[in-house]
Image (cartoon, rainbow, N blue to C red):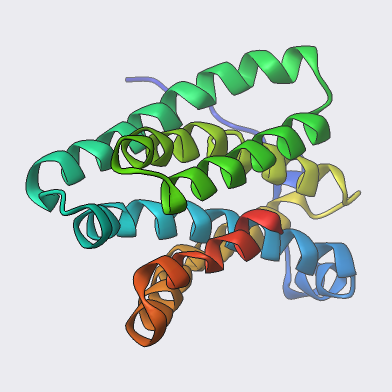
Length: 192
C-alpha cells in the first residue's frame, strides 16, 4: 500500500525540550491536563465499578446483568460520540460540554441512589453523556495555546493515567466507607 508522505506543520511537531518548558510555564496546560485526567478517570471509574456496585447494592449477578450493563455503558458511550459530533456542529462546544457533564452527574446520581431498574438504565446513560468530553476537552486545550500543539498533545495523552488512578481511589474509599461512598468521588472528577 502506498501511503502519502505526511508533511507536519511546525506546530504539529513534538519539538525540543524547550517547547515543553514553554508549555509548562502556562497555567492553562495544567488545567487541561487535569481535565483529561478527570475525564478518563471518570470514564474508567464508572466502567470498572458498575458490576461490583450492582452486585453489592442490588444483588445483581456480575457475570450476566452486571456485565451487560457495562457493555451498554460502552455502547452508549460510542453512540454518544456520534451524536456529539452532530451537536458540536449546532452548538458551542463549551455549552455541549457543560450540558453533557451535568447530565452525566445527574445520571450518576440516579445510578448510585436509585432503585435496581433505575441503576441498570442510569449507569449506561453516564457513558452516553460522558462521550463528548474527551474530544471537546482535547480540542479546547489545543485551541488554548498558540504554539507547540504536538508537545501539548503528548502532555494531554499522558493525562490518561487518570484512568488508572481514579478507579484505585474509588476502591480505596470503597474499602474504607463502602462502594457507594467511594463512587461519590466521581462527583469531583465529573465536576471538574
